[in-house]
Image (tube, one colour):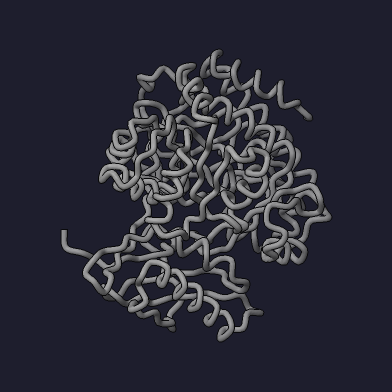
Length: 456
């Protein structure tokens, strides 16, 4: 099935216009296709699916998978026999290769390991075509003709404050696509101190601004105080979830539209937001199943314990009936925006801010991703967790690979954290190495940063 980009764009448009029945038909056909492909080309899935019917159009027939199990069988999971973990791991640890194609054909990214495992994910050409088509669907939902005219009049300038120079999804995206936009694109590192970000944005004046959600909150506060004064048409917070009223505050601060999406390294096109604050699932290319702790379906209107996802596009590394680890709530009735795609709200991706006092009594707020995107560049780390034990004390927990040198890794970690703290005038904050490993939250995830508990 080698659909052209144009045909995919036309199909995504038709699918939405034709409504729920047509969306469900596409989903069943694409599920049967990718299950058949995975069974034929992945030894791991061949073993998992050996007792299934020849044709599978219902994910309920599939066994549940997760990142820990699939990463443990990486070489048998992938469908391209050239791909091995021995080749892929050094590739993503080589800074000179960030954004380049693995084996000359697959962009590859890493995850921070919120479920306890450091993931490596490859995208094939088909996935990129689907991402492009669904991106146009998303932008069409967010922008009208007047908005587009304003963006063009503003020089089409796009500002991105993300994890530049890293093998994460955002870092690889900037490396691959930023140069194509030339001077109309400005990539700023999320590690940059806030005053420097404000100065750079004031000079660049982006028409579209994207950053991690917690960083966007900080920028909204700067806009409200008048230190930041930009006039974007569209704000796109990514990677983290915020309360609905926080999105409203950001929109009001910038007098701009908010385009929010729900994505994961396993599936970069899960859903996109509407004006009523709901996320509409791209159900023609994604199967999203809210379930309880025993993987039984929960009813619409009931918050799930976790969610199972099936990516119907990516064939090189199939993600099928996969425990994503997020808690969601599915809307039980049609969304008032009129979009026929299923509507959800993500309940479990809000990140905590780390608040540290300076020696002069000021408070510096640092998003968790600022640390995570730096630490995971250091080879040998499977999991990282930093706990604030006192206002100026941080305790770092590490889980390392078997081959890692603990002393060398810790020295690199300490140096990286000290550098970040110094950039934000927090040299007095102490950083200690914990003997205990990273700990899971009650929901089963590993929070990268656990701030000090504060009185309400």
